[in-house]
Image (tube, rainbow, N blue to C red; front, side, top):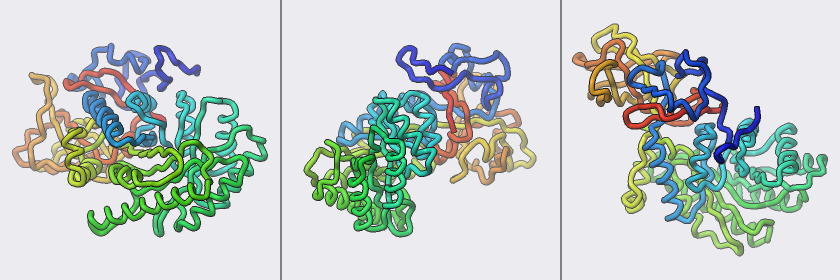
Amino acid sequence: MKTDFSAGKKWVGGPLEAIDKGAPGYGGEVPLDQTGERGWNLLREDMPLPVAVLKEDALRRNSGWMRDYLALSGAKIAPHGKTSMAPWLYDLQLQDGAWAIALATPHQIRVARRCGFDRVFLANQLVGRSAIEYVFRELEACPDFEFFCLCDSVPHVEQLAAVGERLRAGRSLNVLVEVGFEGGRTGCRTNHEAMQVAQAIFASSHLTLCGVEGYEGVVQGRSDEEQLQRVGGFLDRVVQVTEACAEQDLFETDEVIITAGGSSYFDVVVQKFEGAKLNKPVSMVIRSGCYLTFDSVMVKNSFSRLKKRAPTLTERLGELQPALEVWAYVQSRPEQELVIATIGKRDISYDDMPVPLHWFRPGTEPMRPSPVPGGHEVFLLNDQHCYLKVTADSPLAVGDMIGFGISHPCLTFDKWRVLHRVDEAYNILGSLRTFF
């Protein structure tokens, strides 16, 4: 299929098809950017449920929030594209100033390249002959392609360099040393190990040392205070390694990248990285991905902690808003205080249980959902069924629609090939495709 760059837009996927979950089973194929022209409305039951929707106003507000935060902080962002795997959303993030798209796997790199994205930050190790060859060949074939990846061991440096040598690569691979911690995920456990990796990268003619990376999101503590302290100590190590590399003149680029920052502590990352003392210009790159859609539990709780840490920041920029909802029908009320809805683990994340936010009875006027009353709570999910404990006087009946808030956007997006953008009245404005 030929890449379509009409109207300056990148290719973001094939048309909506009747076999897509959440798509009407009639009308044939519809280009994703034309679904809004069909006059479809969620509350009028034009879409089969379950269906995942993105509230356009909240989505654009959140994107603008991060744009304003970057302007205040002086940081750059390479948002985690793995969160949504939706090129339409990548485009939105780049329009609002994203420096690159951060990814995690070779498949995700290929999706980004297929859709025309030229700067990719692999926040992971590039491992295996096929993946390494692909990147070197892509660099050779596409002068505009910029690629960055991580290393945390000398053997990995040697593997990358060996492929570059065998291919007689004309362009070198941009590599960052990854700093880790004992008991964590990837990353050099000590600063000494990190320096050995940095020196090995510097010694290779096919690799270019361009920065230092860490990921603080897996740092644990027994309390919020202890966790914050440990996050700060870890970020101090990232700065120490960066400064040591600069002292030894190991960086081979005009600008040094120092990067960390998932969706929970990006403000702390900026505070710590601002103090790095180098002999070259520095790019502070954070990598939050969940800010764009926010959520109703996990990311919301992280943002609440950010508000406590930096009240003046959030007072100035305002609040993020949940943009991603999954809607389902009430399919059964087999007991007075039990409702079964038509979503399950195949439709929505279950790190935390979904939150019932809105309900609507089809055919009623005005065509506007109401808040779900108190005392309604999801307590169990099967593959395709959702169990809600409800009050004895709950208004919910078979055929009613429920809009659920989610926890952890990454693990809701991956359950949908297509999501629909909606306005406040739940009119379909357009659709977007994911590539998990």
